Amino acid sequence: QVQLEESGGGLVQPGGSLRLSCAASGIIFSRYDMGWFRQAPGKQRELVTSITSGGSTNYADSVKGRFTISRDNAKNTVYLQMNSLKPEDTAVYYCNAQILTFVRKEYWGQGTQVTVSS
Image (cartoon, rainbow, N blue to C red):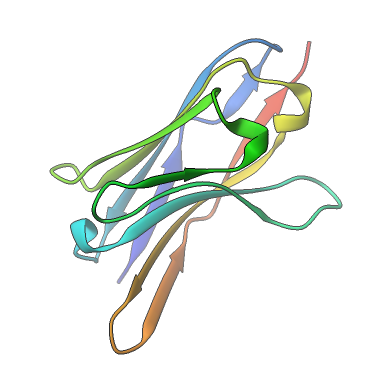
């Protein structure tokens, strides 16, 4: 059974920092591309950042220079370091795992709430 378990969300003041973690089980983690998505109330889910199995990263323009994605294959965990947080970063953040072999497989975590407010 595949599980992606996010942690690290919470309430933070504007300008503050949070680090999200996503621990994966039930997959060969090192082979998967990993990503963080977010969904704010009344908005569509959007890609925040991703990291390939090879370590290449991609960021949404809105978070470039503020957020950093990383992975630790030994711990089957992907991280999202979020700095200089803004109220518009408030959303539920979801971990995503994808692999394309003969078929595309995709898995989602349950999400963790991040609220940026004074």
